[in-house]
Length: 198
Image 1 (cartoon, rainbow, N blue to C red):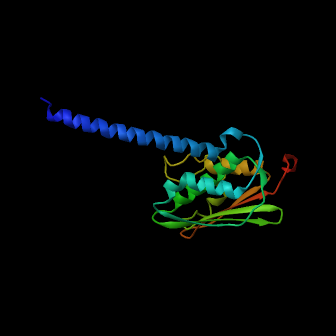
Image 2 (tube, helix red, strand yellow):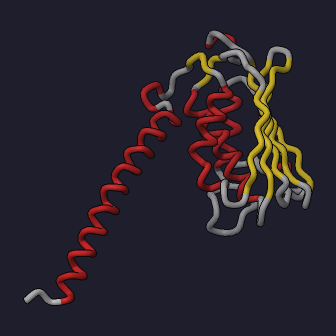
Image 3 (cartoon, rainbow, N blue to C red):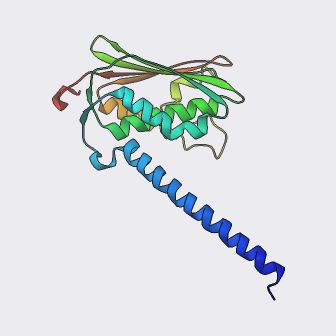
């Protein structure tokens, strides 16, 4: 005679198999998304690309981290394609979005804009989080410098981001006010050939 525990074990196995199947499908989707996000087949090479696409794909990657306490607003103007390392620009945008979400303690808003300014593409990522003290602002792009609690972050994200934007011949700047929020501004030259990058 089948013991009650056998019935429970069978139910557990059915549930575990269902969860495993769903999990594997989810992993497949995540890997697909990561490949698109990191442009894995074209890493370490420059390609003509629409930076708005970088913003959209990165937002998809970090949506789970943002959706519970951040409202994301976008105002993306049409941009020309420009020569960039797609995975690296995605990395910069992701870092700024995660930083913005971590600066928002309860609920808040992250605004992302893009536009053409002369010969440059300008991207702004603005949050209404806790802001950064004026005396700390000059150091935030320094390696290993962090305003976060111990155990949160490495202090390398903004330093790496700064280096990536510099590699692209651009600039990254920050404005912040405590209890008002922070705005990072990225300017990238519109280029069609790598010799234009300085």
